[in-house]
Amino acid sequence: MGVHLQPFSTTIFNEMSQLAVRTGSINLGQGFPDVDGPPEVAEAAVAAIQGGQNQYPPGPGLPVLRQAVAEHQLRNYGLVHDPDTEVVITMGATEGIAGAVFGLCEPGDEVVVMEPYYDSYAATIAMAGAQRRVVTLRAPDYALDPEELAAAVTPRTRLILLNSPHNPTGRVLSREELEAVARICVERDILAVTDEVYEHLVYDGRPHIPLATLPGMAERTVTISSHGKTFSFTGWKVGWACGPADLIAAVRTAKMYLSYSGATPFQHAAAVALGLPSSYYEELAAGLAERRDILSQGLRDAGLTTFASEGTYFVTTDAASVGAIDGVEFCLGLPERVGVVAVPMSVFYDDPDAGRTLIRFAFCKRPEILAEAAARLKALRPT
Ligand code: PMP
Ligand code: GLN
Image (cartoon, protein in one colour):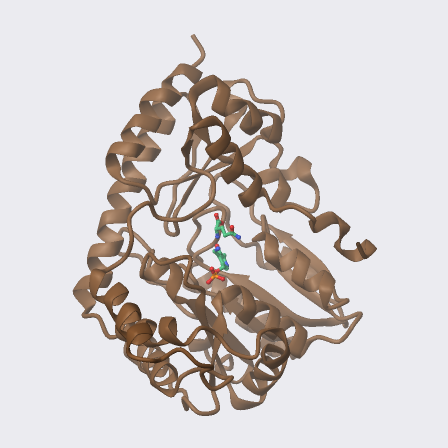
């Protein structure tokens, strides 16, 4: 294996899901729902397969889906995109991120990411021959410090890869924080790539604000999202990137040689999903907020220091309060101790010490499963 890829040969999500299967534990590690999304969306995929929609779609994606994505951006955020030149369909957000980084960065360029960071960012930046520079979000509030952000930017910075709602912290960046990012991008002539896969998983009436809606940003931002979390079909891997035509041309070109195209029937079904009424999105967020509350209370009852989750599938804790010294060791031992799997966050930091005892739990599971997990976790409580 090439030296540049050696640090990435396993993913914590795979490792922890395998551990859950092996030990028969409740899997609150990898973020995927335990109930499928709307039946009419599944039926649309089946109908597409049975209706002969089984050959390659156009490389940039089915026109009907690009149109649906453009309408979604307009309806939700007032962002206007030409579906022919300013939208590309990708194999999940993962390929959108890779396409953006590969398409926009030269070897040696720097990419600023917030840490803890989603694992594909580090691997993708390494594959591009670029360098990552991190800005740390710190518990308990995981705020983005504009001074730290400015300090991470150098003359070699090509882009800021921003993720809000943020995995793993559950943080939703405020308008003020986004304004600080926009200011630096404009002043220093830097591009932005935003990962907004949790855009509809935002709770307590907080808004999700795409960076592209801030002044000066539409012309320098690639906005990435996907169908997986919003419609609870994480295994379908339908994603998209939107932005100005010149930036999207770069993403499209990279995408052309990563996968050429995506899966035709799922693109048909994703177009149907994006047409669901606003009540769908409201119920999704309300249901997840309830689950967040069940799990957060359970974690607190177990004696874990638990931080507020404003969005995503995740709530984070500091397990030092139940005696943990190292999060990886703690998570490896958790199935045997209590029959629950979680994800250690130290693997998402350049300096693992920054998140040594932080642990992420996923709440995208049925309430009865979360209640059972909470009951089991009580055994951790120091006496
Ligand atoms: N970005 C973040 C922050 C994620 O949590 C995920 C979820 N796995 C992805 C990207 C990948 O999304 P997709 O499955 O659409 O590739
Ligand atoms: N996004 C999911 C998570 O953070 C995992 C996706 C994956 O396994 N790569 O849990």
